[in-house]
Amino acid sequence: MCKINLITYFTSTTKINIMKTLFICLIFLSFIACKKEISPQKTPDSEGIENKTEQNMDQNVQDTSLVFSNENIELNQEKTKSIKRERLIKAEDDKTQLQELVISKKFYKEEDLYILDYQYPYLNEDIDSKYAVFNDFMKENYLNIEKTENQILEDKELLCDTLKINRFRDKRTIDYKIFDVKKNLISVVLYKENYYSGMLHSTYLFDCVNFDLKKHDFVYFNDFFETGSEEAVFKILNTIIKESIASGELYYDCWELSEGDFKAYKNNFVINNNIVEYYFDDCVICPSYTGTYSIEIPIEKIMHLLKKYNDRPLIG
Image 1 (cartoon, rainbow, N blue to C red):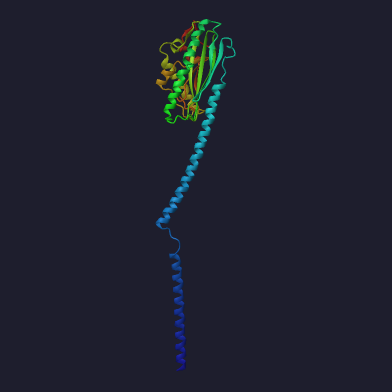
Image 2 (spheres, rainbow, N blue to C red; image 1 turned 135 degrees about the horizontal axis):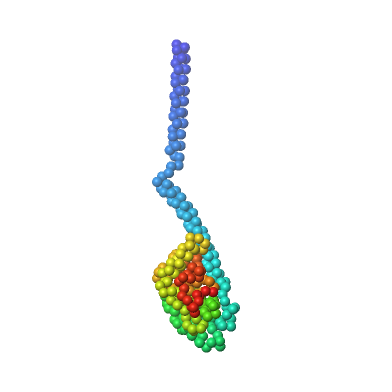
């Protein structure tokens, strides 16, 4: 009897232990399952926030890259514009050789709205009184101060400055280069630098004047080139421009000359030694920050297009 009860006791105890072990295992498994359930999950909201954060970071990187990219572009443009201007200013001419014939005159005027600073050529009428033809032309076209003032005032009106607050002053500067061609012709390029109110950079405009010292008359395209030469000269200019663009040096963003612009500028050339040099205003063949102001054509390339001048070709 006791033996049977003892066996029963041990059997019951073993079952109880097994049950306890199973129970503990179940609790342990439940605990693990709970831990998995409460581990961080990406809800739709949290995913959206995370995506937005990543997008913002990407946008910030793009914005930063864009800022640096724009800064680099501006620096390059400032550099090329400076080179372009320096080439114009430092170009050699024949002022020294012509100092008896040509007098450099100056005009300066400073007002609330503008500054005018002009240097222009004046032929010595003591040598020939008929040089007055050239001098009168200069006075009429470049020293008409009333006309210049009206232009500046019109520009101010376009700025919509209803309070009439003069925050900026325009500045107009004129200077020139002059070349001697066979002692009977002078070639002059007048370059006008304009600082407009509210504009970041100045702009350049050009006028070229060729004057016959013996005939006391101006020389134009049709006097210098053979009749019907317009198309040939136009094509030669564009060939030189295309070659310059292809070279890549300082000519990025430039373009070919249009027929309309050629007609407008066909008289805008000077003869400098053995070169015919055409000058174009800013943004005619290149933007202000790159390229060139002039295109040089070697005389030898257009010799067949030139008229005889005093029975001899007009070469330096």
